[in-house]
Image 1 (cartoon, helix red, strand yellow):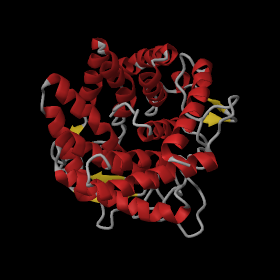
Image 2 (cartoon, one colour):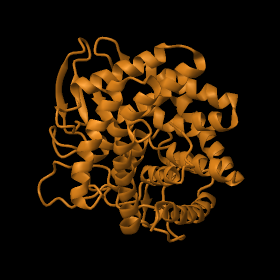
Image 3 (cartoon, helix red, strand yellow):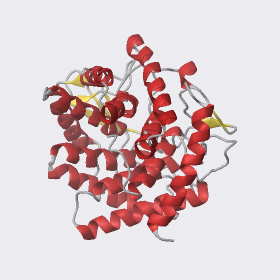
Length: 371
């Protein structure tokens, strides 16, 4: 079936299901669907890293339809997140995921000045995590003073946004320096990336790679590869530095070579033991969006490849793992938190849904540039 026809039909199913889920979860912050029903992170952990994604999906669909119910609930979620800014101590490097999809989206679509202020507040918190000696934004809290994770690449657009709206170039300088540190220490020659880099928090010296959510320190956790593909493509978008586009393509080519071996739906780690069947559909939907971002910047022959692979990922994911039952929450099943964790295995994840929706809208040339 033609791409435009197929993606239009899927988009209609998305609207039908999201309309029902939005009514069911008005004033709530979904994360994972257990036994067919989303939990509410507003009651569990207001500082949880995924708390912006449901609102991000709502904003993506609002800008396409102008459906008021989408906007109103997205604004409610944004207001709920104010409590996490006040409480502060639970926030960490993932504030980009939380406020790009809420406050930045709101400001870009409506011009709301308070949303802009919220986003600058969050960006300032992120900038405050920068380690001067090591040139990196530290991950998490507690005693992980020298840890850096690949997920951080997707949070850098919050800093670039803050630099744009305030004129303060320090935000962008921190983002760019951090990206350079990631390239030097987490991106491998074969195009795979490590999840966690450990540094001496005093001197900034690199120590080692750690396993994190992947199988092992030297493995290739697939959602980490996706974060890197999309993250470096976004760094290129803001800086126009060809190095970042080259790195994004290098990681993308590694991803393509491996995901093609599993019929374009990724297992949870490309370097996991032979016979691993654990999937992570969220890695695929995120990577698809990253590939479509890269396609905006490269020559047409390369762009065609990236678009075709992105479409294959989205098509196969929807065909094999889509859930359009209106009584159940979540659109894409079989997302997995990590290689070793048992609890969050083969379940719908709110961010897997978000990237799927963004990918379909991109195929329809209707996506909102939320990043």
